[in-house]
Image: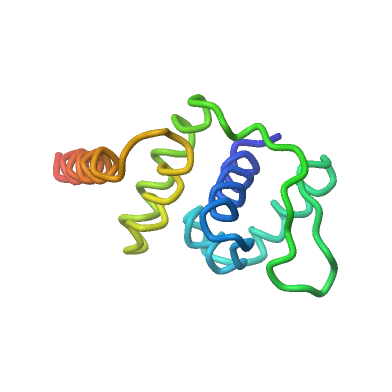
Amino acid sequence: MTKRQHQLLAFIASYTSLNGICPSYDEMMIALGLKSKSGIHRLIVGLEERGHIRRRSYRSRSVRVVKSEVASYAVLDRVRSDAMDAGIQMGIRLAAQRILEAMVPVTRDDLSRAVLSMIDDAKGRKAA
């Protein structure tokens, strides 16, 4: 599984557990910081071929996680920087917060402080 496929699988699993439905291609595109839905489609097809997800043709929000390897802290390390950058660049801090919240068992206040700290760090890196 590629890094991007792992990130998408983590996002789909966390979004579905939080909201009860699968994210749309637009939501996946924004969360991963991609510029087109065709990139998401390519990743979805790859995950489906590897048996990690199932989907029904011609149905929106029909992706279902079959095999999930996303409940580990190693995934958090890989997803955190991309999710944070996507959140800053796209102006959707909530998407990054939801991904991180689903991965790490912490309180909402701890998570808010961590996300704000990451944003401050990112701003510091860009200014340097």
